[in-house]
Image: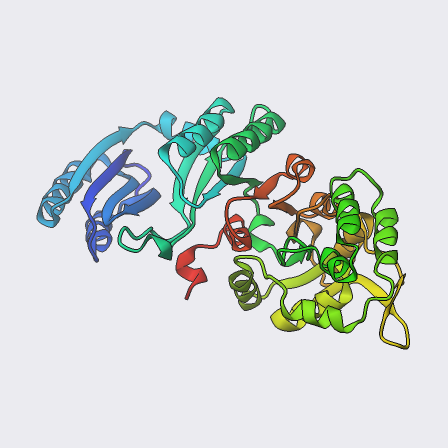
Amino acid sequence: MDNNVKNEQILVRITGQDRPGLTASIMAILAKYDAQILDIGQADIHSTLSLGILIRMDEMHSGQVMKDLLFKTTELGVNIGFSPITDDEYEEWVGQQGKNRYILTIIGRSLSAKQIEAATKVLASQGLNIDSILRLTGRPSLLHPERNVRACIEFSLRGTPVDRSAMQAELMKLGADMGFDFSFQRDDMFRRMRRLICFDMDSTLIQTECIDELAMRAGVGDQVKAITESAMRGEIDFKESFTKRVALLKGLDVSVMQDIANKLPVTEGVDRLMTVLKRCGYKIAILSGGFTFFGEYLQRRYGIDYMYANELEIDEDGKLTGRYVGEIVDGHRKAELLKLIAQVEKVNLAQTIAVGDGANDLPMISQAGLGIAFHAKPRVVATAKQSINTIGLDGVLYFLGFKDSYIDT
């Protein structure tokens, strides 16, 4: 383009019924006049197109370009509008692109205008601008509502929160009050390149606490359950509580463990989540304060790469001794294992994900690049930056930016 020719910027806005070849037709006209594309963006909602193109070209031909575009869009049955953009306005816009970028993801069984209004009001109060909105889940069927039981919307944001901690707390309260989950993440290369995901097992991958199941078979269910709940709330030390609970299982036959394993209630969404993670090459680990017997069962079932849990001691008669073998996998050990596996796999800690429900999961949730509290205890939800309480474990996929359109292919 000749530098001696005076150029101008024009924002072209096209709306209407979408159809194949529409963008190509518009570009053919712009190419004819050697227009420079400074920016372009498109959204398609229920086959209704909204296309924006910021062009720069010489003033001599701009009038003819607008005339040709007007004729073409009339022929195509869509609407078109033009807005001049001054050099100063363009430079101001360019300067804003250096601001921080964030992603807010909100999830629920369904999402209403009230929920979206509440979340976006928080964003506005923090000085964040919404650049784009994307629905990650499939559209609900009116005739068969049971076919799509989740809704997820992703907001791409620009700016820097005035008070990120206060914003996080406000979103957390809104989510609890209004029945939706959220994730607020820095939109950087690490978010787009997660590679290692570590799960708690009991009450996360499975909908039970295995030690409670064993205790019921041993006739000490109420005693063990009371200790378990106190430990998960963070009221007593995990190692102490674990030792007490295991001692109560003394004399239980190992065959009971196999029977429980065969009937483990797998959490909603686990099958779908594991299929996608394996297909996409994620390394997967179970880091559990439960027992190796059940962890190994899940490891075989899903092809999980790493599994660390506690091993119960079994005597020569095939009965539990009331003791354990080796080091206890408590909260501190879980965090250590997360870092160790990341080192072995040559994965930056910022590329890791940790998912759990109890107080002993907080250290690894805090260490991971993305820590998620899943149907968690109040203390864990209050501490974690992301939580899922309204849908199944496959909700993790939406926090990673997956869309249904390529999850379910």
